[in-house]
Length: 153
Image (tube, rainbow, N blue to C red; front, side, top):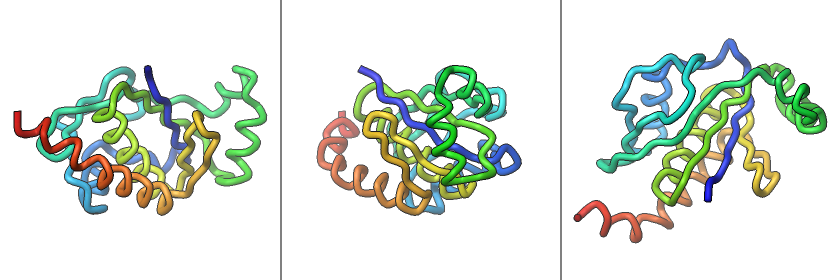
Protein backbone atom coordinates (compact mmCIF):
# COMPACT_ATOMS: atom_id res chain seq x y z
CA UNK A 1 0.00 0.00 0.00
CA UNK A 2 1.21 3.49 -0.76
CA UNK A 3 0.07 6.87 0.51
CA UNK A 4 0.25 10.11 -1.48
CA UNK A 5 0.61 13.60 -0.06
CA UNK A 6 0.95 16.89 -1.89
CA UNK A 7 2.11 20.40 -1.18
CA UNK A 8 1.01 23.14 -3.54
CA UNK A 9 3.37 26.10 -3.61
CA UNK A 10 4.79 29.01 -5.57
CA UNK A 11 7.85 28.09 -7.65
CA UNK A 12 9.68 31.17 -6.35
CA UNK A 13 9.44 29.79 -2.79
CA UNK A 14 10.83 26.30 -3.51
CA UNK A 15 13.72 25.97 -1.02
CA UNK A 16 17.05 24.24 -1.30
CA UNK A 17 17.28 20.81 0.28
CA UNK A 18 19.53 22.20 3.03
CA UNK A 19 17.11 25.02 3.86
CA UNK A 20 14.22 22.54 3.96
CA UNK A 21 16.11 20.19 6.31
CA UNK A 22 16.96 23.14 8.59
CA UNK A 23 13.33 24.27 8.67
CA UNK A 24 12.21 20.75 9.64
CA UNK A 25 14.79 20.66 12.45
CA UNK A 26 13.82 24.20 13.51
CA UNK A 27 10.22 22.96 13.79
CA UNK A 28 11.44 20.60 16.51
CA UNK A 29 11.58 17.44 14.42
CA UNK A 30 14.83 15.47 14.46
CA UNK A 31 15.37 15.20 10.71
CA UNK A 32 18.01 15.38 8.00
CA UNK A 33 18.56 14.65 4.34
CA UNK A 34 21.85 12.72 4.05
CA UNK A 35 22.16 13.51 0.32
CA UNK A 36 22.43 16.51 -1.96
CA UNK A 37 19.66 17.04 -4.49
CA UNK A 38 18.09 19.77 -6.59
CA UNK A 39 14.43 19.68 -5.54
CA UNK A 40 13.23 21.11 -8.84
CA UNK A 41 14.79 18.14 -10.66
CA UNK A 42 14.34 15.43 -8.01
CA UNK A 43 12.34 12.37 -9.02
CA UNK A 44 12.24 9.09 -7.17
CA UNK A 45 13.33 8.09 -3.70
CA UNK A 46 14.72 10.87 -1.48
CA UNK A 47 16.60 9.40 1.51
CA UNK A 48 16.05 11.02 4.89
CA UNK A 49 16.80 10.44 8.55
CA UNK A 50 13.95 10.69 11.04
CA UNK A 51 15.76 10.85 14.34
CA UNK A 52 18.47 8.23 13.95
CA UNK A 53 16.38 6.00 11.73
CA UNK A 54 16.98 5.73 8.00
CA UNK A 55 13.88 6.53 6.02
CA UNK A 56 12.79 8.55 3.03
CA UNK A 57 10.01 8.87 0.50
CA UNK A 58 9.42 9.22 -3.21
CA UNK A 59 9.45 12.88 -4.19
CA UNK A 60 8.82 14.81 -7.37
CA UNK A 61 7.79 18.27 -8.51
CA UNK A 62 5.14 18.90 -11.16
CA UNK A 63 3.77 22.03 -12.74
CA UNK A 64 0.24 22.77 -11.61
CA UNK A 65 -0.71 23.09 -15.28
CA UNK A 66 0.05 19.36 -15.67
CA UNK A 67 -2.83 18.60 -13.30
CA UNK A 68 -5.22 20.57 -15.51
CA UNK A 69 -3.99 18.50 -18.45
CA UNK A 70 -4.68 15.34 -16.40
CA UNK A 71 -8.37 16.29 -15.98
CA UNK A 72 -7.89 17.53 -12.41
CA UNK A 73 -9.11 21.06 -13.13
CA UNK A 74 -11.46 21.02 -10.11
CA UNK A 75 -8.52 20.23 -7.81
CA UNK A 76 -6.46 23.03 -9.37
CA UNK A 77 -9.35 25.47 -8.92
CA UNK A 78 -9.61 24.53 -5.23
CA UNK A 79 -5.84 24.86 -4.76
CA UNK A 80 -5.80 28.29 -6.41
CA UNK A 81 -8.64 29.44 -4.16
CA UNK A 82 -6.48 28.53 -1.14
CA UNK A 83 -3.11 29.71 -2.44
CA UNK A 84 -3.44 31.88 -5.57
CA UNK A 85 0.30 31.92 -6.36
CA UNK A 86 0.66 28.14 -6.43
CA UNK A 87 2.41 26.99 -9.58
CA UNK A 88 3.92 23.68 -8.41
CA UNK A 89 2.83 20.44 -6.80
CA UNK A 90 5.39 18.69 -4.61
CA UNK A 91 4.31 15.05 -4.58
CA UNK A 92 5.24 12.63 -1.81
CA UNK A 93 4.67 8.88 -1.96
CA UNK A 94 5.37 6.69 1.04
CA UNK A 95 5.13 3.00 1.91
CA UNK A 96 4.82 1.89 5.52
CA UNK A 97 4.66 3.75 8.82
CA UNK A 98 8.25 5.06 8.96
CA UNK A 99 8.22 6.49 5.44
CA UNK A 100 4.76 8.01 5.96
CA UNK A 101 5.80 9.71 9.21
CA UNK A 102 8.87 11.07 7.44
CA UNK A 103 6.93 12.24 4.38
CA UNK A 104 4.23 13.86 6.50
CA UNK A 105 6.77 15.80 8.57
CA UNK A 106 8.67 16.92 5.47
CA UNK A 107 5.52 17.88 3.55
CA UNK A 108 4.04 19.77 6.50
CA UNK A 109 7.15 21.89 6.98
CA UNK A 110 7.46 22.49 3.25
CA UNK A 111 3.90 23.84 3.26
CA UNK A 112 4.63 26.02 6.28
CA UNK A 113 7.93 27.47 5.04
CA UNK A 114 6.61 28.25 1.56
CA UNK A 115 3.16 29.51 2.48
CA UNK A 116 1.81 26.58 0.51
CA UNK A 117 -1.03 24.17 1.14
CA UNK A 118 -0.69 20.58 2.41
CA UNK A 119 -3.11 18.14 0.74
CA UNK A 120 -3.99 14.59 1.74
CA UNK A 121 -5.69 13.11 -1.36
CA UNK A 122 -6.84 10.06 0.59
CA UNK A 123 -9.07 12.17 2.83
CA UNK A 124 -9.43 15.19 0.55
CA UNK A 125 -8.16 17.36 3.42
CA UNK A 126 -6.34 20.65 2.81
CA UNK A 127 -4.29 22.21 5.64
CA UNK A 128 -2.23 25.36 5.89
CA UNK A 129 1.38 24.85 6.94
CA UNK A 130 0.87 25.53 10.64
CA UNK A 131 -2.01 23.05 10.86
CA UNK A 132 -0.02 20.48 8.89
CA UNK A 133 3.00 20.77 11.21
CA UNK A 134 0.74 20.28 14.24
CA UNK A 135 -0.74 17.18 12.57
CA UNK A 136 2.72 15.80 11.76
CA UNK A 137 3.94 16.31 15.33
CA UNK A 138 0.81 14.64 16.71
CA UNK A 139 1.37 11.65 14.43
CA UNK A 140 5.06 11.44 15.40
CA UNK A 141 4.17 11.57 19.11
CA UNK A 142 1.48 8.90 18.70
CA UNK A 143 3.87 6.61 16.82
CA UNK A 144 6.82 7.09 19.21
CA UNK A 145 6.09 3.98 21.33
CA UNK A 146 5.89 1.89 18.16
CA UNK A 147 9.10 3.31 16.69
CA UNK A 148 11.36 2.94 19.77
CA UNK A 149 11.56 -0.87 19.63
CA UNK A 150 12.65 -0.65 15.99
CA UNK A 151 15.45 1.80 16.85
CA UNK A 152 16.88 -0.52 19.50
CA UNK A 153 17.32 -3.50 17.18
